[in-house]
Length: 231
Image (cartoon, rainbow, N blue to C red):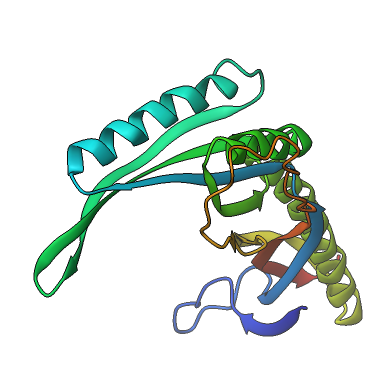
């Protein structure tokens, strides 16, 4: 998408009784954009463990023991970022009486090897953790590299259009007086998962299947060119 506008402005206003010196300059306003669909190269997942008991200490103890048994499956894995999330306790009430205490803790896994991440998710599900969120993203390095390439393309098109407009008007492209560059990414939306506990006894538990998908990287360029009389 692009737009074009012309505004003729004098290089300066001559004093009364003086002849104008120098050429008149015409301001040419243009904008353009470029976008590309890029395969996502980073997977981020959230898993949650929840326990319940009549007393909060019992629920917390059970959760702590289960999480302690599960985390060694992930810790030390090359290429996998592990972060612990929230740890919350709350009570189920019936007629103002506490019936059950529930404790919940979440962890986040992230990495570029989606097959390995999903395989770890399957193992953690066997330990009782539930997959609650799955996001595919672009790494910052890939985003910046793609934006740089798209910016070069958009600027090249602007220059070609400015030179062609100048030629059509019998003018010369003198250069840019201002340039604005913006960017926007459209990543695939997060995939919330049904919260359910996996059975630790299921040794053949299959890992989740989640194709990566793509994200759209877009840049926009707005510029003002100076056109002067052809020499």
